[in-house]
Image 1: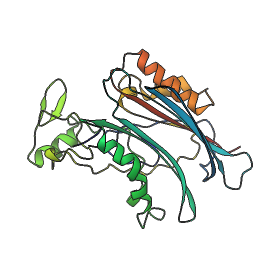
Image 2: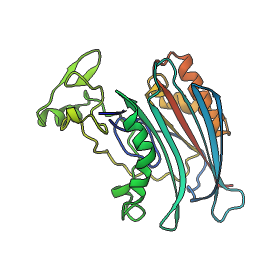
Image 3: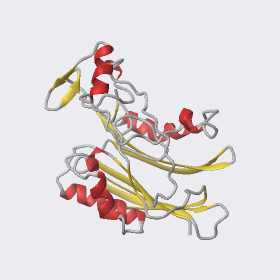
Image 4: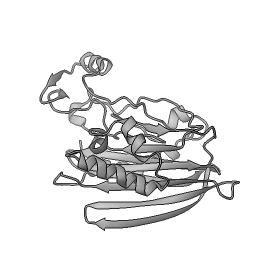
Length: 262
């Protein structure tokens, strides 16, 4: 979650933060290539639903590409606190792709700040390309919830407490245990990421989404819904539609990234 007092939500690819989830599907044995030329397209369906996408052609390949699509809707919430970023650029002579979804709570300012600054801050780190564990992360598919035994122990060792208030909450307030911001809950709520380095060789696509999707759709269901949809924007819109149909009460944002080396 990300709030004005917050953290990054349920994401994958080159992101960090708390409460994150990854969905990926593969049936080919091929490496993920670096990206080069980028084409971006977008369309606004109405004031509450924004979607678009882009294609980045791969260096040294005439037909190979990375394509991505995004879709975001306010949903049943009175305000929109989700932000997302899709960026492909050159860092130290290498093409780097960043896809992030930032799910705010208690306001949108921190989520908006991360959209505009997280990739810039990561890519300016001196070891960004040389040491991915220092500067870049593929998050674990385990939410940072305060009822996780390891998270609860960490919070209690720091002098905090976790109680039930509709759900398990740090200090009876926050339902996530790691977040950017939430300074009133420091040092119990931290922004330290859990870092896991993943080889995406053979991955066909990646789904990055906020709680509004993952609260009602499992990883396996998300993959099944879009594995045969080759247009990444259409896939992201399908997932948003399904989450809304299933009764999601949150803002819903989704980014789908497809790898095509052919």
